[in-house]
Image 1: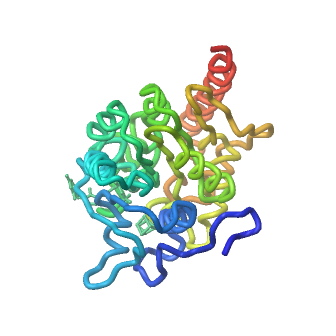
Image 2 (image 1 turned 135 degrees about the vertical axis):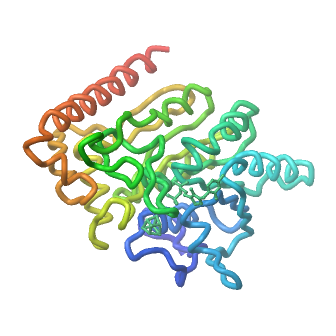
Length: 303
Ligand SMILES: Cc1ncc(C[n+]2csc(CCOP(=O)(O)OP(=O)(O)O)c2C)c(N)n1
Ligand code: SF4
Ligand SMILES: [Mg+2]
């Protein structure tokens, strides 16, 4: 069965798992797997989805699935891919899922190596901007001034002290055929991108913004709205890099960051008058980053 856009509606990530109501990651996995299809093997780094989808003796996975440590998801995926090739089963799709902690920080070495070696597999980073499973610790994906339990808001620091790492662009610098950002608020765009990632002639990387209910301190029905506001405020630009050419999904009327922040408990401090300077700094940073992407879009087209 196909949806109106032609994508499969087959559920390969079954309901009944124990994710929080409204979990952005669970929504992302469900829709990614509809496009990936049955002829696949999934590699899953440690993190929330591993915990809520595989509580022994139950599983939500209707395809072969292996849990790995943080450090080696991409290494295991590349090993599976090469083994399948040796067996003449190159048509089996190999997908690795990692959280932002497992991708930006702990599993980056294995990921970078696998991309450089050129194994054909799709790596999906489920980015909820913190180590959520262990209680909302800051990661390399957490933006500056964001509250987490290890970047609290107080007299010494006002949330995280560093800007987030530009990981999608770092991955693009590996010159793999396909890199993209996506979000759970735009499932058509997400599905098109996972299809292009699957069709790429080498490694592909897709990073999906996945709101987290307790981590972002949002209501359970605010997943879609929070992700939408992230895109509208340019906090989460959507772009893809195909064979080196960057294309942005244009946001012609960006909204102020406050609109995005006010629905989330983790940003309430930035709405207070005493923190106005931090808010302004972040607003400028976000605008600068968006302009840098526009320049890259222009310059990458000139090659
Ligand atoms: C090497 C290692 N360090 C720490 C842990 C503990 N741990 C398990 S899940 C988790 C959080 C994972 O964060 P992320 O990768 O962002 O995934 P999320 O839980 O947010 O989906 C941590 C720190 C671990 N399992 N292995
Ligand atoms: S803590 Fe966040 S990432 Fe984990 S299951 Fe809940 S909503 Fe999903
Ligand atoms: Mg995370």
